[in-house]
Image (cartoon, rainbow, N blue to C red; front, side, top):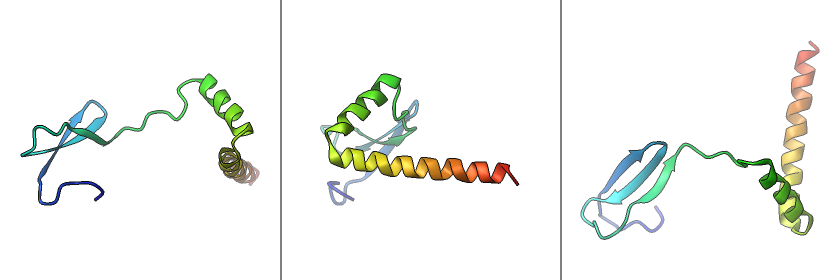
Length: 85
């Protein structure tokens, strides 16, 4: 459960697409985000291009992108093969 206070009750609230939690008896502790509708990974194409530039000098990020590309091409190939039947 992470850093929750033992024995303290929580209230969950939804505002639009965001779910918050707060303690019932601890109003001095502000609520925090616990879930909701995920935001798009890249809201603009420029963010994706920036990611690619950073990956050029960050081996861990490049390795992760290589894995994503492998999954992407595997899915595309699978979909193509299903269309040919």
